[in-house]
Length: 532
Image 1 (cartoon, rainbow, N blue to C red):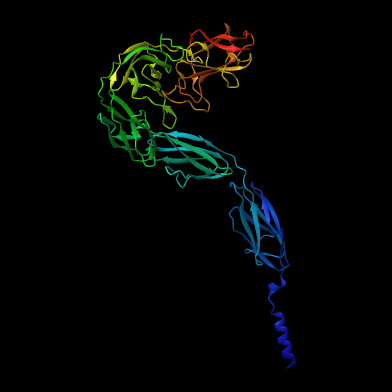
Image 2 (tube, rainbow, N blue to C red):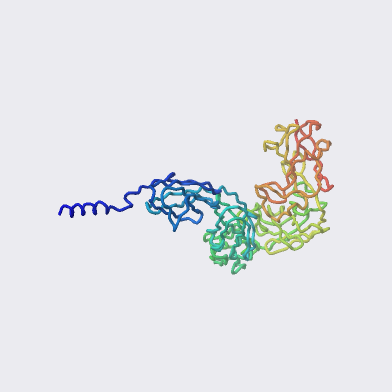
């Protein structure tokens, strides 16, 4: 029986699996490839007769072996060659190569593509009705466009590799104010497309929009009708008309008001809501004096020869407005001034114009830009339900007048030194330094100014279109020394700023005469600047 147990022992010994006799090692055990792709090799080491296979889980990796695989496998040691295609992704990507048999996994990391991207255009404006449009993407990388702005829609198909186009749709804007939204195009780095959707004054209405109040006074409420989520602000332009509810709101709402009893003459006032007016007229027990308009001229020089488009003008007369006077009031979030003050309106050819001050004897207004091309205009005033006499005023392209520091129209000018301090006898400007001269009557600008608008603080600013010349003490200033001529930033359009470098040839003195000529028309004489 010994031969039997020997046979059993030989069978057991020879039954050990063949795989247990194979060992596998790979070099390297991890691979990194650049974003532009490339080829590399992995050594697979094992005993002769030991089989292995290979595979990849990523379409951007292709594999081949030496010796070549037979029936999907290789026997004995060999070299596995991998090829990675170029990546268009702005982030790194990970793949794996698996050596079948031993089950060895070799991670493959491909670096991120360094992307450049431009959007054409990078910003756009669309009307209040909304609509659909596109912008272009210029890149060699993969990208995806999306938005978190609720009124902008970008389709899920807005993706691509390389140059492409992003379509978008903007819902209508039911607000008076414009909306601003963004579309993000993700790459490395991400780019932002900015879309501005215009608003419309017609998107806000008042119901009712007018009231005839009894002499004893009254209280009530009117409705504000506008789009969902649209903000609005209200204020009153007279002291006897009060807002009794919040003066701000969002979407549809209402405004409560109270009108004081009137013991004086008939009067009129307004509650402003955005660009709309809730107008109130109240009867009184006293006969209203006749409104008399006597003079219309420059608010700077008080010259009455003619007015220019966009010029700040002064009107003089009697019983033209409230006592005491009312100063300018901002509207539209500080972007413009109102066309009415204290129940006063000034009409050029029947159209109300922006006002900066209104009182019984003087009103300051801004002549409309629409006067361009006309030879004359008819000016009237309305106050407390009555209309003044009409005054016909000549119109010309320019009528420059320099403001004086004391408001008299003569003497030291409203001129700032280079350090923004006021130029006066004890604070002169040095020759070679810049001074800023403030005037009105420069005429139509480029771009054309908007009646009553407030000039922003960011360039570019509306510029003077007519030729500008300056003389200091009789010395003509070289053209290159006139370094700026346009709207004064942060002030109402109609106020012009001329920046001049004082020539070295100007004789110093505390009262150097200054003349600004625009479009061939000189400013008034008698304005001076102090030069040392």
